[in-house]
Amino acid sequence: LFAGITTPTFVLGPVVAAQFALFEGVKPTIASTGYLRVERDLADAANHHRHTHALTPFARLCRPLSTVLPNSGFTVAETFAAGTVAGAAAVAVVTPVTVVRVLQQNSACGGRCTEPLRSVAARIRREDGWRGFWRTGFTMVALNGIGRGIYFAGYDGLKHALGDDAATTSSSTTSAVAALGATTAWLAFAFPLDLLITRTIAARGATSVRAELHTLLRRDGWRGGLYRGFSLALMRSAVWSGIQLPVYDLLKGHGGPHAVTAGHPLQSSMDAC
Image 1 (tube, rainbow, N blue to C red):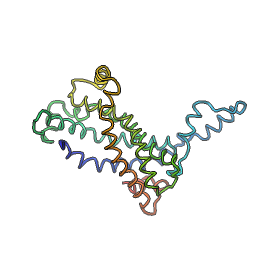
Image 2: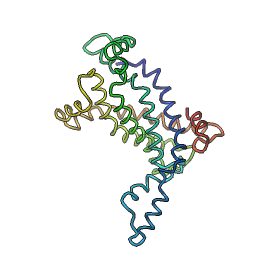
Image 3: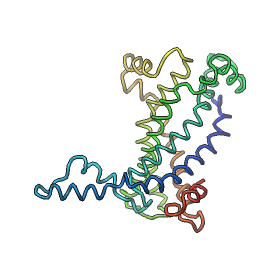
Image 4: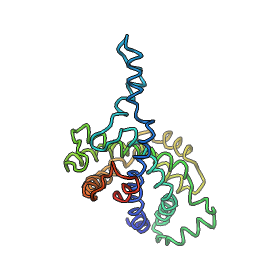
């Protein structure tokens, strides 16, 4: 039950802290470009269609994404972009840890003793070289980055939808409900991808993500193959996020005289960390 627990215990804490710090740090930079604030474009589109009083489908789609959320000072699109950048960076760092963890857990199958962490790492280096530590790395970074974007944007967006527009403090109930919704959306996207990536890592190069996808869909269908164990993962992640995000909001609201959303990106990152 506890095979492979050592690595995530000592690595994921600092990585998660760095992810939140980077998330807060890059939001002002992304917002300063103005690319993801399309209010002016929407106004132009409205004027262009003044005879029909209708916006283009793209403009209608962008309206909710470009709305500045009072609880954060950023748009949903900016929050999504910042979450994607932070999530991708965190996953890029932790990919070797994930590869070692998966292979160490698999080493305990069939009643065998768990292979020591150092032995697993040495075996990967010996058999696959340094590239072995980044097996499925690009796929993992890209897709989990998008998943984290959904996670962060969903949390702030749901808090706004639930009527919680406080910039620094939030209702614990609202934060918990928003965390559950964001976690569900994130897992619905990321869970099948994580399953495919884990199976590919465990196969040690004998298959690919695409091949595993075809195998699972052919054998078990999309529900039984790609979402097996989803409810258990949701229970775990709901508890994790239900504690993590409200506590993060609480600490952010007591981060000193510097406002996280309005301060210098470096100070915002330090406060967030």
